[in-house]
Each structure stands twice: as structure tokens, then as C-alpha cells.
Length: 215
Image (cartoon, rainbow, N blue to C red; front, side, top):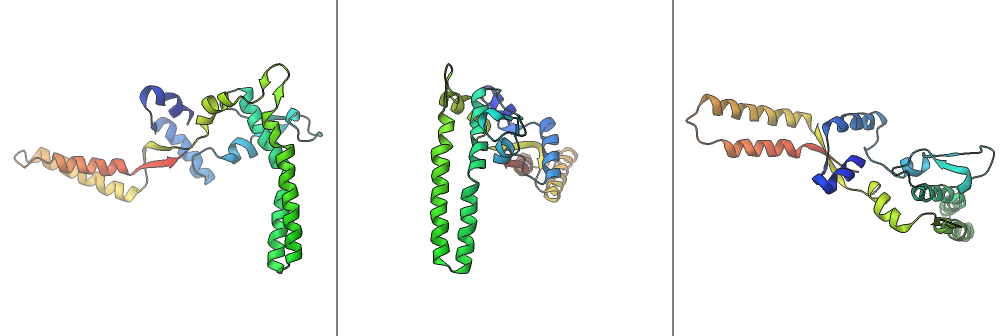
């Protein structure tokens, strides 16, 4: 993903070359996951506590992997780790609400909704402000300009073509066989009408089968 983003301004890259696609797709297939970066990769499974005995605070967290190496990126993702931790009450309230509906109890449902409102208010008032915190000397800990222009492109979604890999092996084999037959026929019988249109159609059909994924 970083390769394509870095190449795009120069070469208008929209494809993952085969030497990168091979390992990427192999790992993806092994894990049973799409070959993309998601919230679990960026946030949920990408942090650790510095002091294992202390609480979850921005100063006690660090990211395991970063795209840019910028402290702004680190702060942005650490903020989301804190939000996930502090939003446990939201999940609990939703669960209680589902149980209340199953029990057909309006009183339990009202209590769950009241608890949900308080939990969301807690997240909004105590957690979201962390994202906009400012250092005493360095200004914003997550500069909006750096976030949108330097970091955000790496986690935005787009569709990429994986060169050399195809969606339907059986259909691919049939198309390649037909193309080989056209090539052989063209060489064996020079007086035949031009088969260029058939050849181009088959090549376009083969190209259309190349793997494309939203990344």
C-alpha cells in the first residue's frame, strides 16, 4: 500500500507488482483475511503498555508500528486506544439494552438507554479532547495538516490490482488455451483473415480476471 501511494504521483501506480503481491496474498490467504489494513491492524493490535502495572493513559502507551514515524500519527492512534478502553460502558449498555428487548421490559430498556447516554457522554467529554491536546512547546500533538496530507492517504481505501494473480483459475485456463489456439492458427495459416480482434478480446478477458481488492 505504501509502495503504490509513494509511486502514484510519479508513475500513476494503481497496481501491486507481482514480487510484492505474492507474499502479501499468501499471508492474507493463510490468515483468512483480506489484504488490507483495517482498524484492528492500526489500533486494536498495534500497541503495548510501557509500564504493565499502570493504567491506560497516553503517556503509558506506545505503538508497535507506524507508517510515517511521526509523533502526530502516534498520538492519533493512541487516542483511539484510550477511547476503546473508556468506551467499555457503551458496549455494556448496548448489551443490557438487547437483553431488555428480549425480556420485553421497558423499564430495563429505559435504564439501559440512560446508562448508554451517560457512557457516550463520558467518552465525548473525557476522551475525544485528548486528540486535540497541545504540548507546551510543540503545539498540537496531532497536527491536522500532517494527519490529512502525510498520514491519512496510507489508511484511506482504494482498489488495487494484484499483478500476476487471478480470480478464476478454471476460466483463466480456458481463456489462455483459446488464446494459444488463436496464436498457433495465426502462425500455421498465414492466409486467414486478421485474428487481431479475437486476440485482443481474449487478452482483455484475461486481464479482467486479475485480482482486485479494496485496500
